[in-house]
Image 1 (cartoon, rainbow, N blue to C red):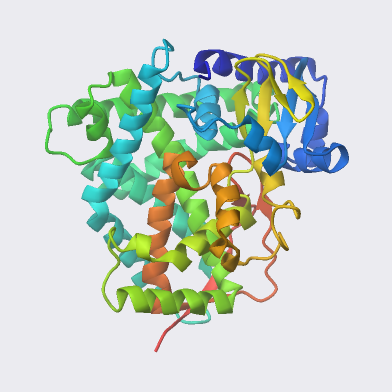
Image 2 (tube, one colour):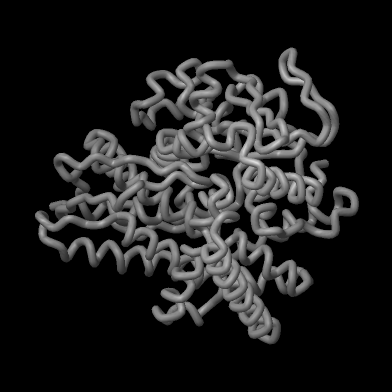
Length: 443
């Protein structure tokens, strides 16, 4: 099993070492604009297995489906995205003794998310319906800002489901959003390009925001510990007898990653539908056939197969999480390349998701490709579907399915002429600027 503690220390040391010594390929990464864009060029030049230097340490990057298939172990007890995020936050998973505790912790975490969705689905549906009704009130000529509105939806959904009714208060959500943005902006870029370690003021702002969010999560846990009937994510963790520290850490990971992944899955999905009229109408037809005029339910979502294909293709086309990482536990081999023990191994997921050898016409938004079982197998292998998918992404899929099933049956989505949407590649891919659409009511 991956030794999480070693990974966390190694990953952060590599990052800080790269900043202190400015050797290796750090400046190349900065010049490219992101780690993902650097990896695209690296694999284009050197093939599916490539190495580079991060500070004084060698790193191996895997940029092909076949190579990832050789390296990925389906029995791992942690997913690579969560591992990387926790290491950047300085958190550990469990006590680090054996495989039992991390496995139990993972099951508790995933079970808490599932129960939270099951028992709070009406809240989620209400939040979505409020947003769609707001859009429906706009004249057709009005531009609707996707990033602002859908990040707001994600923040309200995650905070209310994770921490309870306290976050029905907009003032609480605004405070959470301020701290969330301060933390995520540095995790997404400041650590990875080394700029955070060079700025004492930015680092102090980041540490202050992190401490305030941790304090909020601890206070919510204390309040919930005496409320056994609460159905929030935090309460389900408490019911599993996790320590206060463990509840805080898992709450931080879920609220941080859950908000960003959910928001951007929704943003990119609505954007792609607005520029793909045929896909939008095919989705509308499925929604009417399966749901009629009734609100979507948690039980009906698995029947929305084309909706699932739309979301899969959104993740693929947007390269939603372009990079993940693991530490090599023991010496291993990929193709003819030996990977020494304790080498940081990067999964260049964004490279793989645009590989023409794996995906036909990879830059085209085409949900129909996911009707092919072999395509789904490749997608699942990368950790975007099935048991290998991170829990935050599964949560995001549910929110996005509720949004699309409500939105597309009520409104037509239209692109804004002349708009150019560019991506910013960090831990999660986001639009560089707000993205706009217009809407019109269906007859």
